Length: 435
Image (cartoon, rainbow, N blue to C red; front, top):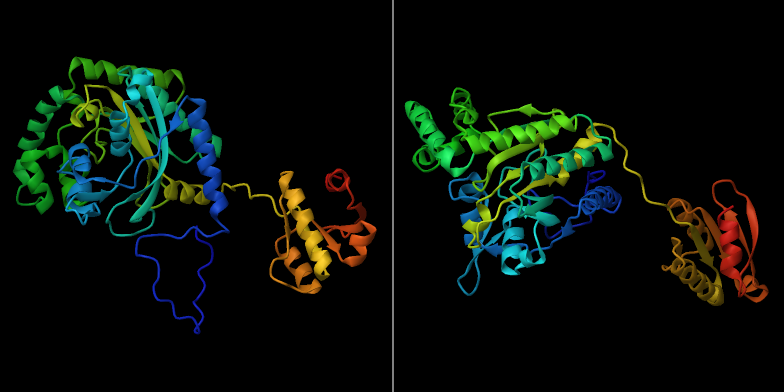
């Protein structure tokens, strides 16, 4: 993803290197990010979603309340610090809480429901770096506020499915589940507490603290011992109330009607406390242990938890690093950007000025053009034009400026064309350029 890793020359003595768990996106690879960001944004806009941008840091209380104090994110992974004024601030570990806070604080709900927003954002979690997991990572997310209908759930899932298809991705499994509402989940939580209490001597220390406060979190534990114990735990689908059962049945019915394949997986609970009813994940088998590319669901209690009036909501987060890794594993080629259309080579003071002027004129017309800005020789400029794979070159010296005529060379075929550089320059250039 970051190109070739080259050894740092011995004569260089860098004062520092990038922080562990962070990644550099180099110029040779940035087009890949532009491609997926543009595709995802365009797909969201086709469904009526508008972009929202929120601060990289928020008051710590926001994440404690929304994400949940018993989650791994809050207990172990947040970057939290005190400001000089003594306020506790946290770098966002996910995108939903900030988007919900902004929607409430700015009364976006007055614009009419449902509210549809999307974001492309950086997130920060203090986790052990490994393949597909970074301490700084990037998410694309979509959020909908104001619809309790199962149709909204199915529409969101179908939208994500369409995004993956648009990219040509086929090696993904959609897993869905319902974790119910607070009413029916209370009975399920008690059933889990009764079950896990039998294994107190085997549970990890973190899960022991969850046992009384939020036993559902044990199902999301990464410990191999706790995972094995959780395999025999009660299934949430057996505890759904009538409303939650009907909601989940309608979601499945709509997905069936749209021929969207899915697997009902009762083990999916998602890692954040704000989820209710529908939860889902898109999972790949070819990018290692961190196979969840996209996850989301419904969180009908989040807005009220943040101080607003009760408002149903749902959304998802999609990891861009994992998405890029998946595209690479599936050998899906991302279109490369256009190379330089024309490189103007200026010789002498007058030729350099004219090359600069013509470069600006071509750029102003929407075509990628370039010229020398380092004082290279003719030979070096030709070599550089070849290196950046310029489609055409035009050499301009004093003679060309005085005669207002130059030679335009096709760098691939070697073919040459006469080019007037008078008042009708661009008209003549464009005819020649498009041949």
